[in-house]
Length: 122
Image (cartoon, rainbow, N blue to C red; front, side):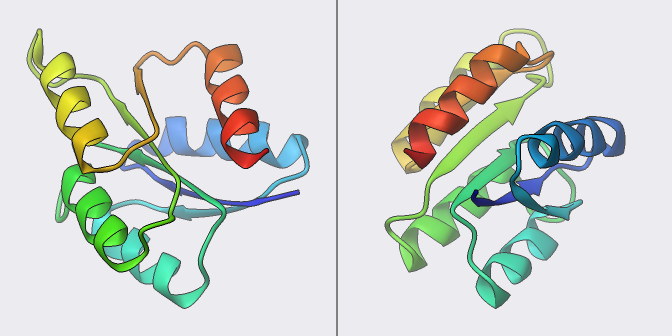
């Protein structure tokens, strides 16, 4: 199937998502922050990136910006728990402007996320 890079600092969510995607036949690579995620993408590009927005070291906005600058065709899904109440919409607007193809709020409705993944990989 496809190679998917998950950049997510919450280990439980990252592991769950990896397991679901591997069960669907995808090759999944993980990173727990933006610095590691960008390095892994540069070493071996993925077909799709799923990134959290709020992370330590390098947040998802910086990840999207840098990768879209250097790899304009990269496909990105941005996810956030929203931080403080009401911030998710602000983050999503910026993520879309920077080049994310889809955005999701945690807790993620998995059928919708999987449908978006399938659509972006088609």
